[in-house]
Length: 470
Ligand code: ADP
Image 1 (cartoon, rainbow, N blue to C red):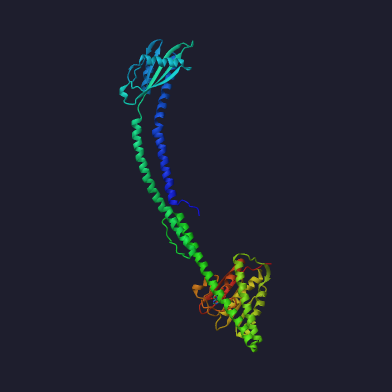
Image 2 (cartoon, rainbow, N blue to C red):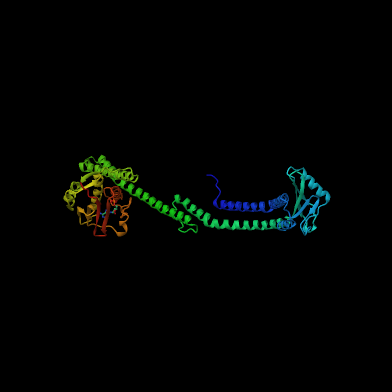
């Protein structure tokens, strides 16, 4: 078997991975990308402003009001040099980084060397101590040219970049806390999910593992989700079914071996007796051996029939036939019980009733009802057979006035190998499978069937076949 990861570890691992991923993403955006993103936005701002001022200069519309407004709104510092004069908004040096002449000249020279007349530079020197440690400035120099490609004006826009170190330090501390909280939360969540999913599943699994050993006890409750509860119920049902099948199998072995042993003992006993005592070699004794062999044969045939039916390997040979005639002719088999054993067998058979079905299989059902009636009819030895037309079909019934069936057993007698009397009663099939074969046959015919019985007063076994309309 493959060494698979258990569900509880899988849940824990997945959650932990998720937590680590979230923290890594936060870390990436908050700590590593914060500074470049911030700087980029500033660079974009100074470029845009210098662009708009250059446009104004080209249209000869630049005023000092415009400059001071732009400076205030964008938190930048704007210097404009026009034909050697130095135009600047009011409040000139407020917040503006100082520039030494050689620095200024270098910026202009670099811009002049550029194809678009633009130059971006950064200073790390803290020209404005008020900005504090790590404060930097960016300068964007743009040359504005007139129609003759002569420099008309120089625009320098600068902006301060505050240090983000302090902010990122605070954030990294926060991220540590968040990480720790995430770990604790992950553990709690794992524990909770474990209780709800993994533990009930493991419990159900444990019970399932013990099923083959014959331990059918399954805890009816799980404290998990609906799916776990349903799985548990399914397993319980399966356990109950297996238990029932197991019991049926044991009953079958007990019954069948008992039923096989009795005729076999008789056959071997009579055979040995006839060898030892030649005068016992009589026709009657040979007949006993033949009868017992027939009984064995019938039992084996019944067993084969039942197993074939349960595997649905039997198909009905359906035909339209006279049910009245079929039952009447079957009744002749039982004349011998009238004559030899003192049975009163009444026949109330309506003539000319036609049904559709497998006549030889239905004969088997009827004969099973009859043999049971004979064997369980007790001292009264009174049986009534009825075939009559009813509203919904033809009803065939066999009534006896014998021992009857206890109410608690009625639901079970159609089950395989079920015998009311656990003390063996030896009858023709005698292993508690006659009625289960009858049930299979009747269900294949989609017939209604049943038994009405009162303990001590007798039973009526019946089935109803749909009336065949020509
Ligand atoms: P069996 O071969 O044991 O008769 P069946 O399947 O034919 O097997 O019947 C199952 C059980 O139903 C019988 O063992 C018997 O207890 C009960 N039973 C069947 N028919 C009758 C009846 N007419 N009267 C009383 N009990 C009956």
